[in-house]
Length: 263
Image (cartoon, rainbow, N blue to C red; front, side):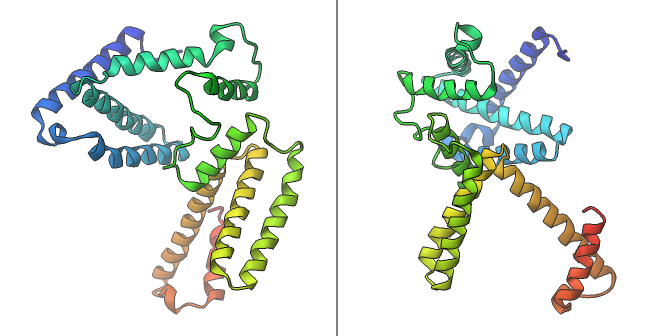
């Protein structure tokens, strides 16, 4: 059940619009912002939201959603000043797109699973008047490589370009690892880099086929490594030692201790 009524939500949204209107006029920093100057901050805010989501930090999720929403409102405000569009246009275009792309909700099309909805979504986008010209053209160039690989493969899947059986992917993974090992042995850095990219792409493919988000999976490992390394560092400092002066065996012993504690 919703925590607030529709009227309360609309009132809060209107208040946000009013606050930004005033800031745009009276605050020197807000007044000078442009699409170009805001873009780096927008990227940072989205990553901060992703960090809060990964940690399931409800308080910070709420806060970071507000920061991202501020940027949406800010870009719409800049658009209204140039006479190109305003927040009403943004909302209307989004609603129109959602309705058009969900014929199983607002029309007669049948789609009983999330996978079928996703397939329909890609097909519909290709038919849209202003839609993407090709299947992969909708993948933003600026996406981090790991996420981009996942989205490329997922879009290809939606038009039927995929393995018939997901177990088949392991043959490809092993093949790519073998090719990487071969190039590393030849000491050809450029070819080895290309082959390592193929290894990563095939592993992303495997993750996708087994319904694992590779970016989330890698970030979990990143956080696990940070926790264990911080334990190693703190333990070393308490003993009056320096990591640089310790042997690998000594560090491994503390590392395994952290692992045993569930860190």
